[in-house]
Length: 312
Image (tube, rainbow, N blue to C red; front, side, top):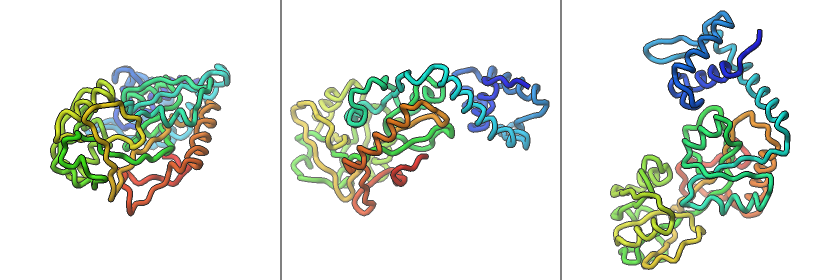
């Protein structure tokens, strides 16, 4: 019996999502096309793989038995394609979170390596789709749950975050601030807050009720907007090089210090040799530069970090 890899991939995605529409979205096909692929696979196997009902879908016993070897089959197929393409293909890496300058960190581990092909994703959902489609091999930015079951990530760096605010802000002269001191201020975000997980969780954790969104036209424009209103503030990693914006002040946050987490993200089963080299370089630089130091008594993260070297 010859299996169609497109049908098997559609089955695995549907089994992971337990929703035909979401699974179709990750494959960039219509729900109708995905349903047809799975129906053909079930016809070939002579058994149903899903229970379909008004409350969604769930795996049958046959589907549960078929899922683990189906995943192994896909991994083997992907490895075969990688072997045919050859080991000389550059590792395709996208970065996101551009306002927070992720290239600063990636440059320290990647250097000027010719083995990397760097691109720019819009946000975590867009790079997730690109990874699942096989358009890129890895991505670098802030990862937050829930993640797709077909992806893994490794924590690379934890960066202290400063408050940036107008020089006319009532707290601008303070040498340091506690996050809760900003409750009477307006959190200025470079986009819809529900798409900016770190800022969204910071506002909820420290009681920042007044929030407003801008359009991300780059760091210089964004900071000019912050400096233009004495009630506004935003957050940036402490060592992001700031443009010379008149009327802007950067103040460290303490008790606790918010930490922005950078992670490397990839699709499980990816066998590109450059991926191992990149993760090893990240781990080595994290050890040298003490990038993963975290003290829960003095630091704040939206999610506690996993032990160094672990994957999720």
